[in-house]
Amino acid sequence: MSSAIIFFSFMLIGSLSSVLGVSIHGMSINRIFNNIPLASIESSVCVVDKTGEFHPHYNRSTLEKNVNAYLVKNLDGYIDKYKIRFSYYKIVDDKYVVDGSMYPEKVDIYFKCNYCTYLTYEGYRNFEIERII
Image (tube, rainbow, N blue to C red; front, side):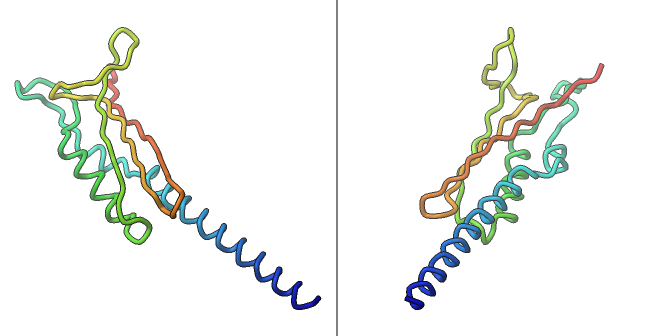
């Protein structure tokens, strides 16, 4: 009888510790993604367009490179690969439409990864250049 109690005690402790480890792992990935430094986003903002006029916008390649560099560096040891999508958009007549122009002002970043055999983390971050008049 006492060996059965010891066996179930070890099973309970093992199960709880593995659940705790997986949840801490997922929370770490969530924290890393949600804490993308604003400096990496702000450093990809261009303030003038090709005509030399004041028109702040995101440089797409710099933004994507900065965010990917941050994620690769900080997710090392947590996951092997991830999917990321950058969607540039604008608001026209109170509707969200894709911004295919050279001067996007709003971006939605979608992130997805598998961090355990059957567990997936998905997250969205939005960044927008605000104009203060």
